[in-house]
Image 1 (cartoon, rainbow, N blue to C red):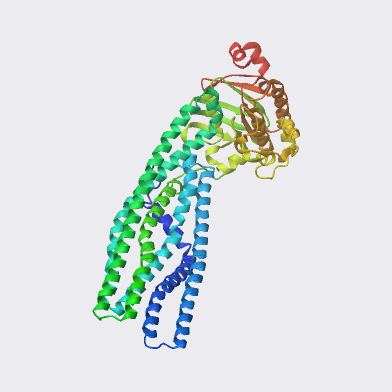
Image 2 (image 1 turned 180 degrees about the vertical axis):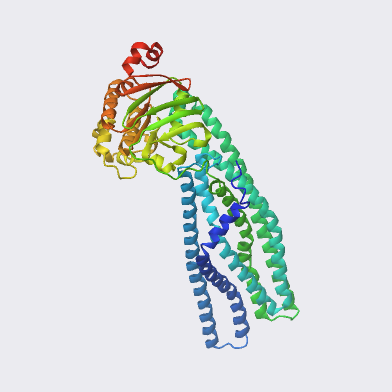
Length: 566
């Protein structure tokens, strides 16, 4: 993993500060309400002690009624403050988690990729689990403060009865938190490692699902399962380690809290036996000793949640603070322009040079599949312009001077393995819902039989990754999406490898007709598409070695004939 940003040494802490800063209002309201809840809880044993003290002196029905009314008021305050306090905090927590999920997703969907060495499955884990755990800080801080209020109120009340009881609570609380603060550091380190291993397991699952069909095809599913089992086992072992650390932390916290409560109760009993505090104060002290276990437990668990939130925030910072791979330009190409590749050296490309005039339909016959993939990646701006030699011009302007959004708006590069999304045929063809050429695109891609086959037509439900479609249907659906975009320049990479020869002939004719007057480049070895093009460029060993029509090349170039004839 590359350093995300040398100018910001603590990006995880910055994320936590941002979350706290923009939820100040909700946190203040939640703190007041939860503080009122804890104060009410503390007031209950204090009130019981006062009632016992008062009833021993005045045993009238009026005193009993007043005592019952006071207890009812305390119980009502406790109930309502908890209900509305948690509502405020959980709403803020959920909203903040949503904001971070959206930010991480926005980073992943930006046109310019970020310089971060994470797979899609890992980014998914960061956008879900880590975003949720980071947002927990919004709820943790008010609960921490309210628990502190309860401990302080209990210490003051016990101190008024006898200073030794108050000091015992304060000294015991400081000792407990000191021990737990040391233990929480190990929780943070273990949690970071667990999150990283879970993310790697998630990334492996995503990769396996993507490649499930080819794995079944060549019998590699057992080896793939073994690979996933290994990373999943690593994640499981680390999760067990984290659970053990958390268990030790929780057990230690509970034991120390119980020891403190017992010490307060025994000290109060000794003071009462010695006549230094009254019976009412003894009842109050014993009640507070029992009650104080809950806020102390909550108070002592807060360091663990803070460390977990910080670990998650640091993982989010890997995505949010990572710089872009390249800094794109800000200009836009002139509409209706052509495409030029001048001396491009990248991967299998060796000084590639060719030009496609505006409105021309050109096919590129590539003898090496690697060169085809590299050319498609360069044209799609999946490779930064400063990462290769040479220049790609769109409408006579270098791509490096154009914004990526402008490039994508004017030129669409449709990959041979275009993704199909869960939804309908219509939403896959027109994701934005703005295309006016859906019928033409469906007809040109020969998707008409798929639409006619189902009663719902274009509203036929498509499963994730097109699981309920054949390979040819998925490829035609991807082609229809590319045609429906209706861009000035369209680059198609092997758009008909999964369809039969008859359908391929019809698609080639339809694409040439529907794209007439607009720039079209097809990287293919399909004789039908090569024959439909205005001219054919032969790309061999990274350079253009021949240029003519398909039929002329067949007649005079034996190598070309061997490469494309079926």
